[in-house]
Image 1: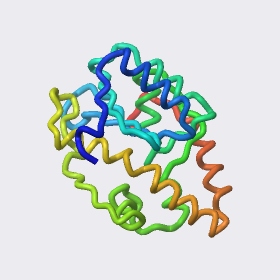
Image 2: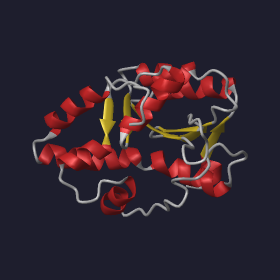
Image 3: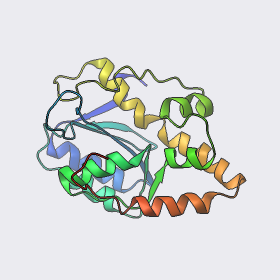
Length: 198
């Protein structure tokens, strides 16, 4: 994946068009970037999304109204795939009042499968033979413009997530633990920002 493969969403018109495409997809990978290590007041500074067809980065500092994305997250017909969804769901609720339905959390699945490494990088390396450079994990995502390296890092977090989801689901089915995971996903749908750091 090169930078030219990543759509940067910086206008309401672009977001509306993206949301239409995502709303027609069967599943969407989602991640967020904040800057709690660099800013006294934290907030969402970047939202990454990938379908089976595209990867896009949404800049909430440039797009005033993210409601089209909120509608996609709320749409139960579209599966939302996240890794360690708890924090993302809390801050999306805190900053925008967004609630996500029909979830699949790859971290939860990794725990149910007894994986020794449940971080995204470890799982991608094991299941997809893909290595992620995590050096931007605690970067200052409030800075603009984002560097090409930061863009590539952010996009990778969702770009590979759907393929990982499929591999992990197969493992769940083989071990007859899919129902366990679905119970956990249902619980995640009820997560809300509580005012305290998760």
